[in-house]
Image (cartoon, one colour):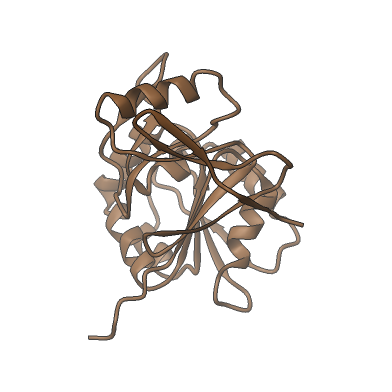
Length: 224
């Protein structure tokens, strides 16, 4: 069998059209085929339209993959994509629906063949073993059953929601795996399972390496 070439994951702290476009630019294709997965938003029509509007004019073939209602070959459509973009929303609900349809397995297969995977909030949480999530109601909790392509934990919205920073620090002190947090305008870029760089679309926004009792800001490359 040929060697496995793990792909790229762009874990975004918050929603940014520029970060989404950056993720698409990493695809190894002249005109990338982009699959939009709005599962975390329950395939909300307005959210889908907003994605197309944000990516209007980009040199790529865009399509969205619905899992609610009657799905139309979601695994096959993901298998044909060069880039998969996952919307924010409810991480826990999204993972449950993915597993019913085998989408989690298809996303892993896409990553192993070298595709670009990315997204914000829930669309970043999902790639890690565990994450900080509001999926279960008011307040933040640990979610410990992500797809697990990336080791450790993740926290989005680090500068956008005041409870994110203290909650993540507490959860890691209490035994949650150490990991990475991203401000809303920043993204952590992984090649395979290694953090390659942090990119940002706003001065002062970055990512942080979180361990018990420590928070290390990482240098971010400001995208033009």
